[in-house]
Image (cartoon, rainbow, N blue to C red; front, side):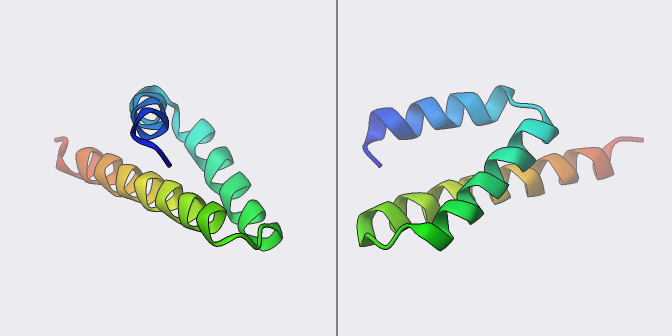
Length: 66
């Protein structure tokens, strides 16, 4: 992914709802089963890592609230 795509994805990720994030995560997982290209798979794995980091961060915020 080039840096402009990553920036756009991060902006979306920052404002997306949990349902939107879960849906996009599933789309990426499904796409991994179909794409064979090394670069495409690397981009999908990067997207998944960013999504999972966001999910962990949001879960941590909910736990830290009184």
